[in-house]
Amino acid sequence: KNEVEQSPQNLTAQEGEFITINCSYSVGISALHWLQQHPGGGIVSLFMLSSGKKKHGRLIATINIQEKHSSLHITASHPRDSAVYICAVANTGNQFYFGTGTSLTVIP
Amino acid sequence: EPEVTQTPSHQVTQMGQEVILRCVPISNHLYFYWYRQILGQKVEFLVSFYNNEISEKSEIFDDQFSVERPDGSNFTLKIRSTKLEDSAMYFCASSGTQKGGRRNIQYFGAGTRLSVL
Image (tube, rainbow over all chains, first blue to last red):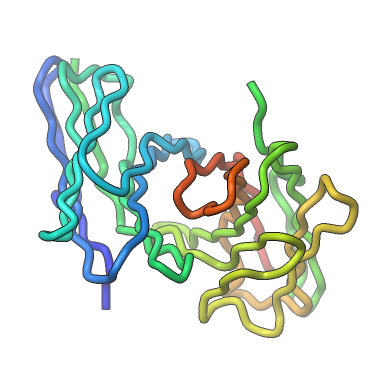
């Protein structure tokens, strides 16, 4: 069973497009994390959310606790945004569950 | 900028051998984590550590695994008797200068690739 589901699994976009990646979860959570994994394997934390919305540069993350859903948006996408984007949730017991990731390719 | 460092970057071992993966978390962080990612699969949580003890562990983290913070700077993951299926990338992370670590951004190391032959 998957506690965290992401969609789409793969996404190809033209440079400049607005991108949305979705995450749904089935467990009660204390926080939701969006992570970026580069082709070399390194992982970078983008956002930690427990409610509402956060913005950092061209990235925006939102969460709807009632609907158990979060979205990651990228405005004015660029080839350097190409990576795997992972949604992870921390449940109230401090266990973490990861989605399978969304592989994004931005074409110049 | 402070970072989490992991050594070695690649460890090759024979099945049945013990391995220790090392991590140096960010110095003022309070919460420490190990994750693994089998090639082509999703990241999986192994264990979280706070105040010198395990605070949470997953089903994967069985008696073959142990963690330790031996000297206040290193955070190690030991696998007692490695199996072929332990081959994976192992990531260490740290977070939290405040109590309530699960609500803090985590900083990840670059990972150690473990290959069990």
